[in-house]
Length: 88
View 1 (spheres, rainbow, N blue to C red):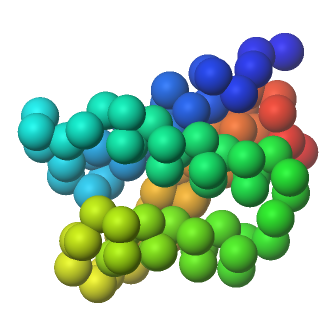
View 2 (cartoon, rainbow, N blue to C red; view 1 turned 120 degrees about the vertical axis):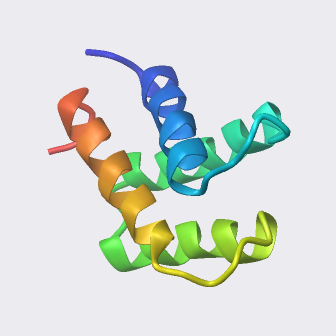
């Protein structure tokens, strides 16, 4: 079974793509946000809680405009976690 590091690495790519974060994005900051969401996914938090967390990252931490993009981040992150066999 692959580990959380694989999940976080994939989630960082998802976040950069979905939120259109350019090369100026702080990689350590994005890794921190991805790790936090990964922890919640691995703890089997509800979809509602995952969406709230991702929305908070999008709007309050990254200061991106309000949109439903955070749901795409959660969708892709959950799919990745399932494909890695980390959650069912």
